[in-house]
Length: 228
Image 1 (cartoon, rainbow, N blue to C red):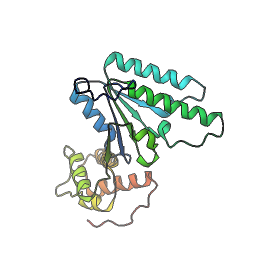
Image 2 (image 1 turned 45 degrees about the vertical axis):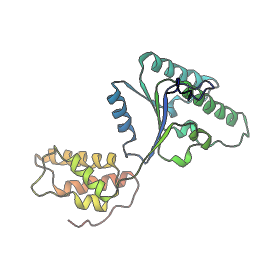
Image 3 (image 1 turned 90 degrees about the vertical axis):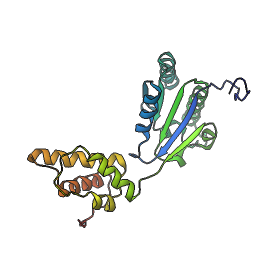
Image 4 (image 1 turned 180 degrees about the vertical axis):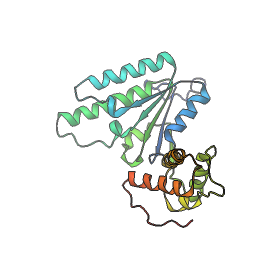
C-alpha cells in the first residue's frame, strides 16, 4: 500500500506503526501492548522513558539509539512508558536545559518516525502530550475509566479462580469504589492473602478491605459504609 499506491509519507518516515495509548493508570494500556506483541508473535520491549532521559548532554540520545538498534535486530515491539517524560508540552526556551530538552524530544520523534516496526507509547494524561507530536501518530487509542458495570465484570473476572464463600457478591465494591482494572486486581490479591492466611475462602469483608486499601494507596477518601 505504501509503495505501490505511493502513500508513503516520505521525509525519512519508516514503514512502521506509531501509536499512543492514553488513559488513567490501571486501565489496561500495558496489557494491551502485551496482547499486540503476543498476537504478532513478537517480543515486547518495555522502555521507561523517565529512566532513559539523562541529565548529561548527549547521553539520552545514546541510550535511545541502543534501544532502537536492539529492537531492529530482534524485530520487537517497543513500548515507551510514561511518554510525558519526553513528549510533554514544550516550554519556552529560557536556558540551555530547556533547549536540550526540546532537542531530546525532537531526536526521539525523528527516530520513532524512521522505525520500521511497531512503537507504542503510553500516557496517563493525553492533554500533557505536545500537539506537534500527536499529529505525527498513526493512531491514538483512548482507554476510558471503567463504569460500574465494567468494574463488576473486572471484579468477577479477577475472582474467577479464587476460592470464595458461597453467595459472595462483588457488586457493592464495584458500585461504591471507583477503581480501574489494575487496582481491582490488587484488591482481590489483598483479599486472597487475608483469606489464605486464615485458611478460609475469600469473604465479602475481605473484598471490602482490599478495595479500601486501594483507595488509601491512591490517597482517596475511604467510605465508612458499604451496603452489602
